[in-house]
Length: 234
Image (cartoon, rainbow, N blue to C red; front, side):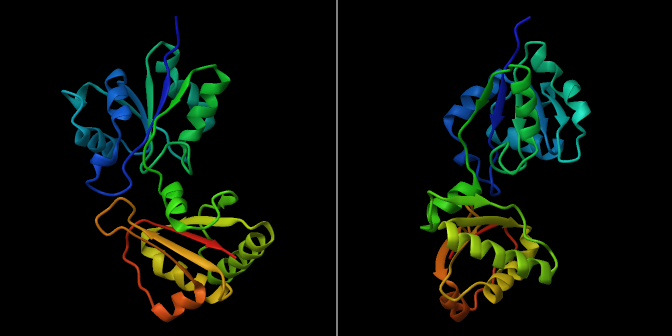
């Protein structure tokens, strides 16, 4: 039996923004009725918002999250091995980028299953595009440590690396910690370091602003509890 294909399906990164999903995704979805998702409820709501399927009830969903054990992958990938197309949907943005969907992609390559990445919004790359910082040398670091002392140490390490390599440092944060992380950055980065804050990308309150730390301190900014990406370049 011929194998199916593994489609990487981008999700929206702000509420009520299904319009940002390109035609390529909408054209591919009718070919897919099996999905691996982080949360079944939100995945169903997302697909419903695209108004592609006559009924969401005809679709099959399985959970693939950061807690999924590797030994469960053969079971999760079974439909594509039987010839069905299989879609991976992230909770936000593009599967496989800071996302457990990478596990399915790795398994697909091991089993010579074709992997089809579809274009869609990625807050990490959109923030970098709009930052004006170095897009030739950059690194995504995920989340900063929660504890202030550890966060301060990490920020200073990343700033030294940025200065040495002329490298943009990128990380994300849980929305309710936006202001705490911003304060950590202002307290621990050098005054001349350029800092970008990208808030609610593609959403109604979207804002991307790059200033030196010195100028940010004068602004005394405060951020809403919406998804954010932080970038800096020493």
